[in-house]
Image (cartoon, rainbow, N blue to C red; front, side, top):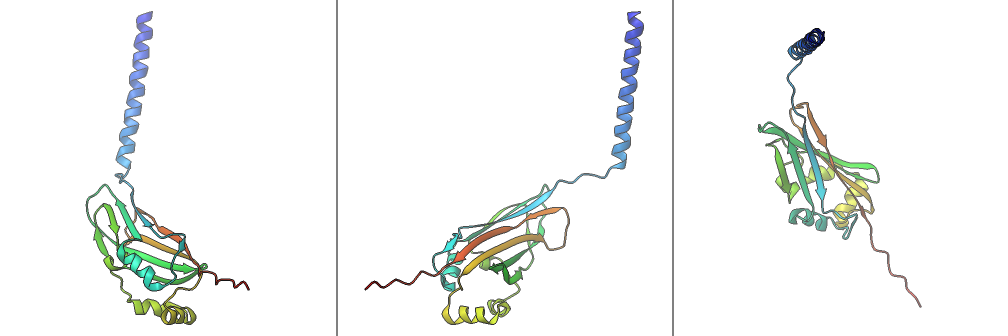
Length: 189
């Protein structure tokens, strides 16, 4: 009696394994090959919440000297290079001042630290073309006084594949900062 129960149990287990293995075989023949998720991430570091000097030359020199850095991380299980462009947008008080896109450049997976981002990454637009995108009052203030107007700013940088390749998750970098002028002294008599 025990032998028959064991034999029936072994037969049930064998049939169940055959059904499971057959299901896996059918499912694997119908599925597409899997690819790992790729991603990009941009980090903007070093820009303080309140800019200490509102002068455009001072801000530009801090980008050039490496005090304000842009870090680009690209992860992919393939070591093949991919052409990326950087979309850069500057807003003031929730209004877009300008949007520019860099020239495409090939990157292999890894981390890239740009100590002078606007010199290391090539853009189609010249500084004069960027200034022409600004409204007249803002452009006059920047050109005549050399300073940025007071306000709340945000700098956004996003790296995306140039060819529109899908499957790459892009996380943009965002730096929020303010430009404030010092208050004039109060005269006490």
